[in-house]
Amino acid sequence: MIVMSFTTAPTPLWSLYAQRDQFSSFTVTIVFAAYALAVALSLLLAGHLSDWHGRRRLMVSALALNVLAAVVFLL
Image (cartoon, rainbow, N blue to C red; front, side, top):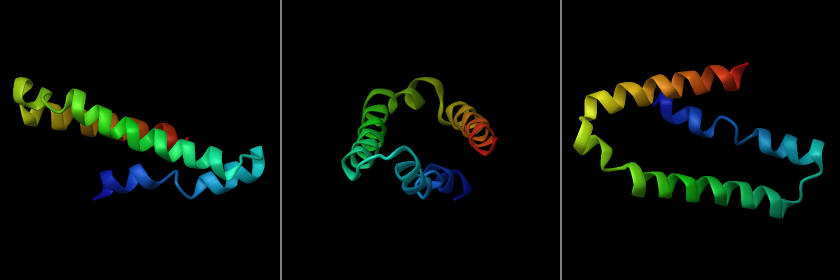
């Protein structure tokens, strides 16, 4: 649940970014659409990797990458 919450952590910031950088609502919509497209493409292209390399190995590396991303986001 904590890992899933980090995927939505930047969402409230987009209204601040839009205000500060004068993004239009269309630009913010494009950002969210690009995120959804990237998630769908990554599932399509990398979803089979756990079948080849094992679920545990990929889960551990994915969690480590998520922790690293959270630290970068917080800094």
